[in-house]
Image 1 (cartoon, one colour):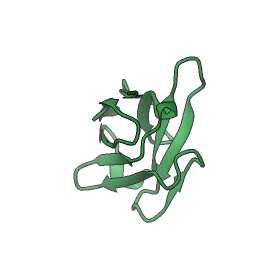
Image 2 (cartoon, rainbow, N blue to C red; image 1 turned 120 degrees about the vertical axis):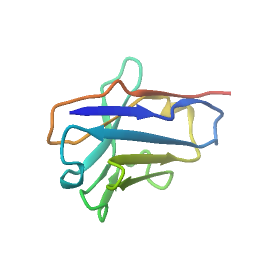
Image 3 (cartoon, helix red, strand yellow; image 1 turned 90 degrees about the vertical axis):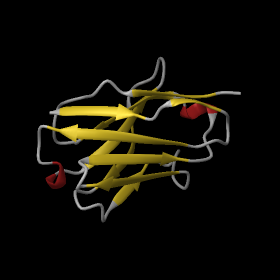
Image 4 (spheres, one colour; image 1 turned 60 degrees about the vertical axis):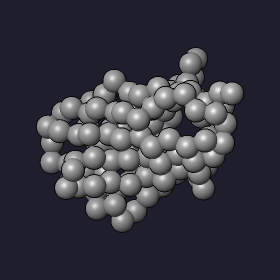
Length: 113
C-alpha cells in the first residue's frame, strides 16, 4: 500500500487549497477513503470520509460546509477541497483507507496571515 499526499502549503485565512492523495498497491475502487489531520501537540483526527463509489461522504463538524471530499477511481486518487480556511485548520493532512493500516507521509497545511 502506498499513499502519496500533495497540495499542501501556506495560505492566508479565508483562502483555499486542494489536496490530492494518489493511492497504489490495493484495489482503490473497492475501499472507502478518509482524510485525517494532526496538528502540533494534538491527536490525529478524522476530517472527512468517502465511500468506495463516492456516493456517500461524511465530515467532521469543524469542517462541514467548508471542505469537500471527492475521488476519481480511474486515477486512484482522492481529493480534499478546502475553502474558507482558518488558522485552526493548520495541520499535517493524511489520507488512508480506514480498513488498512498504512499511512503516507502527509502534506503540511499552514493557514496564517
